[in-house]
Structures are given as C-alpha cells and as structure tokens.
Image (cartoon, rainbow, N blue to C red; front, side, top):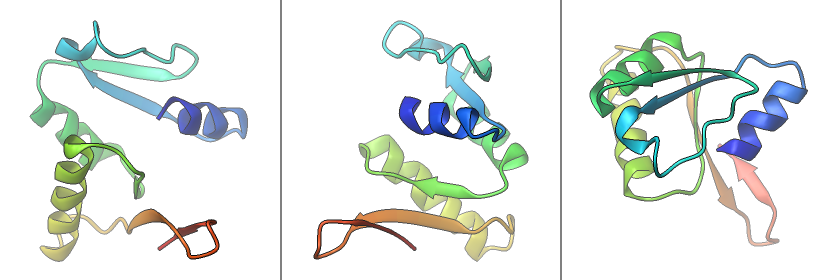
Length: 98
C-alpha cells in the first residue's frame, strides 16, 4: 500500500491512510500523506466507506479479502455507489484492472 500511496501522492492525488492503533507496532505509517489512527477495524472501514470515491483491491492477505467482500456487499446493497475494481495478472503477465 505504501507504493500505491506514494505514487498517488506524487501524482497530485488525494491520499488518506487509515490504520488501527494496534497495527502501529507492525506497520509503517507513510507520513507524507494525511493519516488517521483509529481504535478498531470497524472504525477504519466506516471511514473508508465515508471518504472513498472508489475501492481498489490489490493482492493481499485475508484482511484484504474480507474488506473486498464487504465493499462488494455495500455495492450490491446500494449502500455505496463507488465502483470496486481489482487487479489481476493476465496470461501475458501484465496487470489488468477490472
């Protein structure tokens, strides 16, 4: 996520990092962009829901999968109008966004 945040920031995009406090010791905060520390994952997802224009799902772990499914559920239930998209490798090895 750091590379994506850095690239978006350097291109003039608006970036907001949201991290639960319990991850402070395990993760690195990218200080060049606005960030908020929250108490719970639920609070993190609520802020993401309120502040996001779109949701991009990049390869990650079980937490990424859980958040991806939740954003798809929000969209399916018409709770959020932002389009979800994901990244996958094509047969040629290039990345494709859908």
